[in-house]
Amino acid sequence: MIDLNEQKAKLEDEVKELEKDLSTIARQTDDGDWIVNQEDMGESHADPLDTADDVEEMEERLARMVVLEKELAQAKKALTAIENGSYGVCEVSGEKIPEDRLKAQPSATTTVEHAS
Image (cartoon, rainbow, N blue to C red; front, top):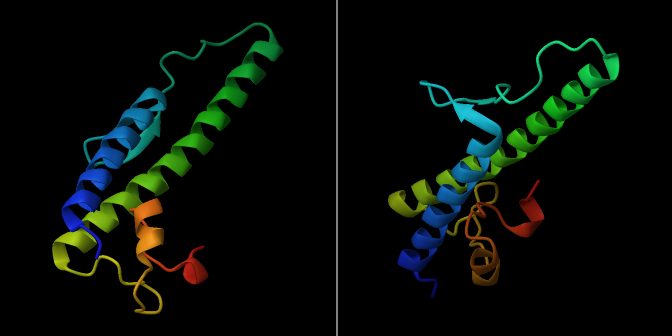
């Protein structure tokens, strides 16, 4: 039997870590959305290569932000599932998610077969 208190603690730690990681590349707006930080990126450049470097850096930050946001949403969804009693049940099939999967990935909300 999976220990829900232990899973909840793991998920809360994961949420804190993901928010910390996000805050290194983005900032959260008043409505809860994340936007990429641009403050530490260069101003306009005379050299087009410098501008290209900034664009590349921005694209990398944006891609990383999208991944972190997805992971954060998944962890929060799993916490909600603990609260409403649906934790450990696949969102797609309604089947029980194997304990080994939940222990390895506490934020899992689907069985491996239905993971996207």
